[in-house]
Image 1 (cartoon, rainbow, N blue to C red):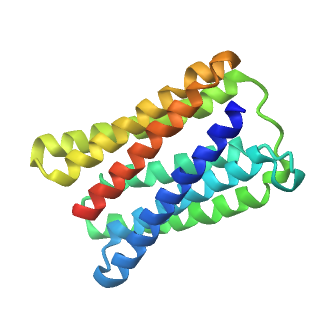
Image 2: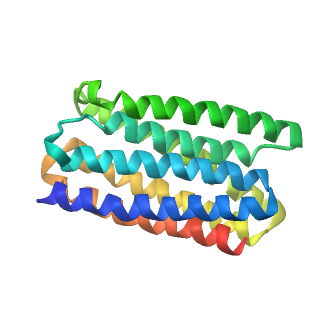
Length: 208
């Protein structure tokens, strides 16, 4: 029951990420801002990974897919490119980053197609490692945007740093449920926190 509730809560996470992605691409069409292109593709990656994970966890169509690998790839890839985009200092660097992101997205689509062939996650240690990868990437993004806020004091960088901090907290709440099955209810709290985090990121790009 708890796992089903947690799985259902991943739907609004994927939906919010999809909304951010669509909005970013819409504004990109108008402004041709490379930063928005990177954001749109990054959020599409996170959204796709989340929805594929939901399909696997809900066993839709009777599938027994091990979707943790795909979900983690999408979340890590999306977060990584948002972080990297904040480090870019020139137009040439941004163009190179966009090319690499397109390559990453193509690889991610291959990862999705191969989902039926992945073995189940062998144990809590691997689940912790996958969770830790996301925490590390989002922590880097939090530190980067916090640094930008300290140096430039923009509202955008402040809200982005808060969004990534809440994301890190959300993934930290996953840890007890991974280690102890009787604490699986923590995954519901973790999902709720991540919903707040992605809404915060949406707010940042809406007013930034």
